[in-house]
Length: 186
Ligand code: FNR
Image (cartoon, rainbow, N blue to C red; front, side, top):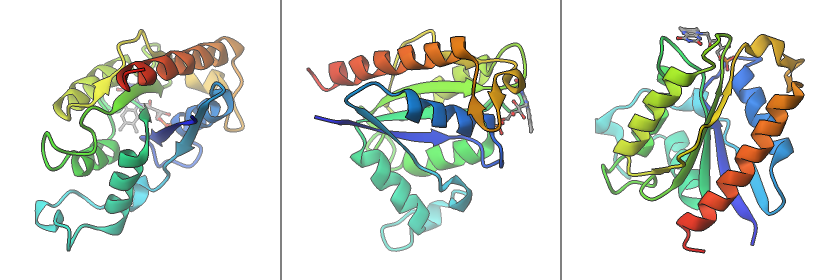
């Protein structure tokens, strides 16, 4: 059966390297896996607990939660902002994480990648994101990960062109496919 992975890039910037890295994942996914980007991050309002009810919840948030619930796994591609993840991404995770410990994240296999211009290639943001996802009871894949450093040298016209990085992404996705199967008990 086809494995459905929801992909979310934590940047709303036109020309985002992280969104382009997610596109590379769509291109490089192994047979039997489908990566569907969720591109409505810009529409998600600031978290407001007073609006977090079945009657009042904003539609993009409801759609985000539906997409996570329906996916077999989640691929988060995060930029690094001041050694952490961008607020837009944290905000969306906060919405989707409620009700606490009973949300759509519980038990959900999650893989993390990221691209940045620095030598560290989002290492610090990825560590923060792992911590955040642990709070949601998602199952973050233990993995050396995909850290795309010096991003401007690795993308051309919105496409990941660096061959060694493409090989790493393809292998990472195969590992995630195996991990999701393991988490599903088969
Ligand atoms: C950055 N950037 C950055 N890069 C990094 O490696 N470590 C960091 O701590 C930061 N901090 C940071 C803060 C803020 C507010 C901005 C706007 C940028 C650079 C960042 O990685 C770069 O702009 C990426 O290109 C952002 O990702 P997208 O939008 O290309 O996906």
